Image (tube, rainbow, N blue to C red; front, side):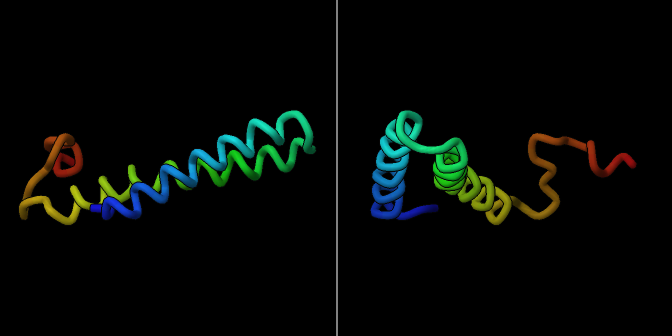
Length: 74
């Protein structure tokens, strides 16, 4: 789980990147907008990925989770 300080910093980074994306849409080349959007996406995905990793690390042995027998019936 991400620490509160890291979450706070990531939210601030997202805010700054959104602002940069808004301003770049008016003043910069398309490539710049695309790169800023990619950075924003990467930052946004950190928390989601961390949550998924926590779930995988904390699962019980033999637990099939939400997939049921999907992977074991083959």
